[in-house]
Image (cartoon, rainbow, N blue to C red; front, top):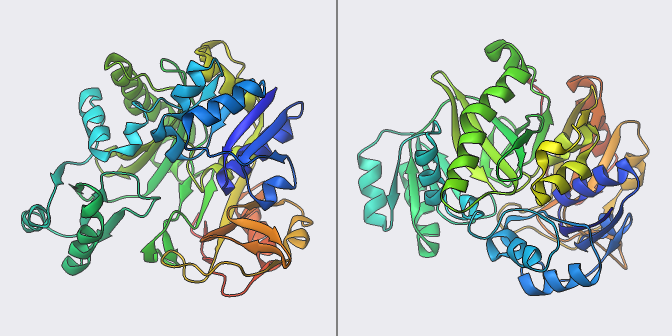
Length: 419
């Protein structure tokens, strides 16, 4: 299959690595990064420009386009691809609003009867203050629009809540949500707008520092599977079945009924409360860094399922085959992340890390120049360990991380430690 993957992060590198592992595919990435360029052809295309992407994909004879990040989806890239006759794995601009607007997502949840927390919309600082006055801490504030994973704050600090509101209100309204207590779970569901194929659940770590301290980030690590789910639901499979039945399928149906069918990857951000599973958020694409631990556990069938979803024939696709394994990823970030990351610094030891058994290094923000491999952004690398158990996978991930050098680099030391 000839496949174009849009994006430049570790999520896209993970998608490409999984497709390459299947064999038999010719893959191009746009724009990719230094690590991706070492494995497949990369091209420079403005992936947020729908017509340019569609023209390139049609002229290139691609059998499938996989859209990684949210920005191209919200820009309508999937719409342009379908109009050009190119199968696209990703929702239309209208359907991608389930991530592009938190209030839109809440409306969908209400129509679908999906369990979630209560919320109110604040369009001014006075609205925010009134909502905070009317509720007890901890407070949950979410930017309504896209915010690169940094638009959410959960805090007991009134001043911090108001400062967050002041930072994001110029870009649009905020949601003030009910605080829900419990462990979080990410579950990806592939859909053709009618049918659903769930992937394995994962858990990510959003705070910068050990013990879930420090500022919110795009994610500092993740692991899969989640053995602790068996204690609550009998098995991980039973949990997945419940989420598909009570969350994913009702949401997919509600979107289809509203004339905005969702085709692609529905990311279900969940929390396991004492009152049951509730939805924190929906995203319209593979999550990062959870993708980096879910896809390495797939043995075969990924490309066929993605294409079947894009073509509306998911019910006829061969089932995914899974490895009996675990995966842990640890993110290496630049000094200053998530505020003002210092870029341009040299990265060393990647080849040494990759030489270790069960270690894969996925590039998130890297470039190649006179200094060799350099950091070009905040989250720089994902070091993924795989093994028979979470403990083995975790040990391998940290062994790989230990081989890599980046001046001022930041990484958590407790990813998957409790698991």
